[in-house]
Image (cartoon, rainbow, N blue to C red):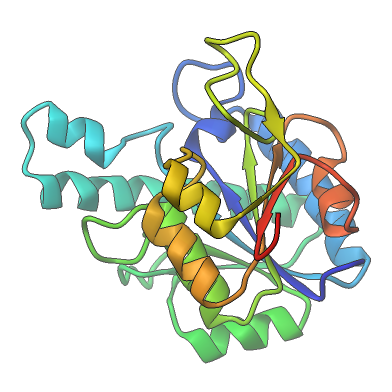
Length: 237
């Protein structure tokens, strides 16, 4: 494997599969199967999961909710996803711990950096739920922050598309996929791959970002192995 320690960012929407809402068990099973192979090959893996398949704070705010309140509801949605993902991983034989930024010790550990690193060193997957524990920050920012805190070698962003495009490939058939980009290009062009805070955090800590299609079988393993999948964002294009 090309990376000793990696962080995988899963969007809540990715867990829906083809469903209009909620979690598709087949998607969880597929992710768990790929993750089990990554762990078997010796890479330490942490996961940050979003909550957009259940509740998205920005949409709640746009509908009239107080923004901070809406973001807290979104954080709770990520914890639901994290616990569901833990169940799927453990059924696939992967020892897993969920750590949450909002304490709820009946169902998960509180986020403690040194404990998370120790779990990783023991070969356990750590799933981070609850975002940063603070409103006004996205789970993309959480992924960049946790990656820096645990000294991850890379952030993998698994999405519904096969990389970063110059425009929305679902709306524009002539959209061009970038193979490589540097952080400054993403920031200056306002390319919608991760929010600017997340990109800046990765830039400041020299953590590359690889964006790839979650629904292509085996892509998680290929990405961790260093194969050319999706788009890579780093210090040089």
